[in-house]
Image (tube, rainbow, N blue to C red; front, side, top):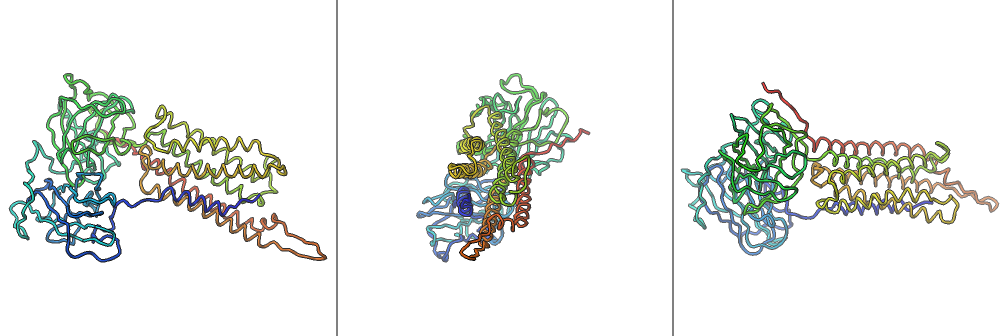
Length: 604
């Protein structure tokens, strides 16, 4: 029987597209330079909103409290720029005071150099903190774009100018709205980013990505350097809330010796803690750390400290002359210093490490091997085998109807082999997350529920095929519809499940590349399906009806289909190659995007 393939393709594309459509979220990076929103209309002339700060001077590393206030507004965009060259890029970085109403954006090469809204909810004021960079201009002016309604907005509302000490201001003196923030520094302040120059030579280093520069805005860095009976530790990374590392005797959280650097009101608190299973860390009442230093600048959180190799007087502190797995995590923290669960899977070393032993320069993995295997097998099953099997069954019955393999028609044998391979790969992949988690995951959202539905349909489909009626049986048409609808539903749910799974922290695929690639695969499959449907329709139109002596001679559909044999084989070849390209891209992303190759440099 012939199924409405074109309508099915359109329906499937609509379902899959709806699952990945985004929503407005205030990420207006396109306006970084002009600060003009992409709205129709012209900006208003007389601003209703004001920017205030709590200081008139700053030094590199200082933080300035910035307020934007006025009548109700929906959106905003705040930057700090060189007051003498306002056309230049944004300067410095911001830290949020309320993550529910504001978010950080990266303009140009400076991370967190702008602040924008998170939703259209009305608001009267916004508070953020600006962190002065090392190479800051002499004078800084704050600018804001405010959107009251879609067509009512103001662009580059001028704010106060703050200057470095002993520099004449280019504008009249600012009347501060509150007392200036104290610029007194902590006991020790880190003056510049850490260096990786001694990694693998005098220091034991962990870097993610591999060989990254600790001063870059995307590098997570952890180093240990033995100095006599103590170890000096440096940790840095792009985090607004906290950075933490833990020493563990296995690759699971629980019973671990942890060290946290937490941003509390724009000062970094360094403390030790004990991790009990997958729960909030228990901070120690006594701190065994010395020579504590920190820095918040250019979107990086840095901290360093020293501790003894052995600390028998402190319960829960591991000896540093023993080998451990090392976890490195980052996440958000509240204004009061309460830390939240890490935003993504922690980096875990691939093996046991002795930080006081041979200096090394290594990486780790943010995705466990079992989870990577789970994702890889699912991609193989649902991007290659099932898709090709469906195309073969749908369009190659007439083409391969006279070719046989092991006593059965060739198209049927190919279809059955590919579908059984899909069931086998799906079954193996299905059990891997349960093996890794030791049970059901409560952190994966709808992904495991949809995965179970896909697994059930994958098992049901071949079982139903085993009871297929004969070709001319009255129930054959009913079976065909059930067989098609079950398979189509399984494919749609599988792709939606993969969309959800790609964003889970355990797999840690590069975002948004993974979503775009999956959308590309869906478009590729639907496009091929539509092309073959159009081709089949054109063949049907070639059927000739010849009436002679009231006898109708109808060219068979099988013959018409045979005319397009070469075209279909070419399309199938191109389709298979395209599927392999998508598959290889996803497998490379799973392997390289989340796995960092270890590089060991001998101590010299």
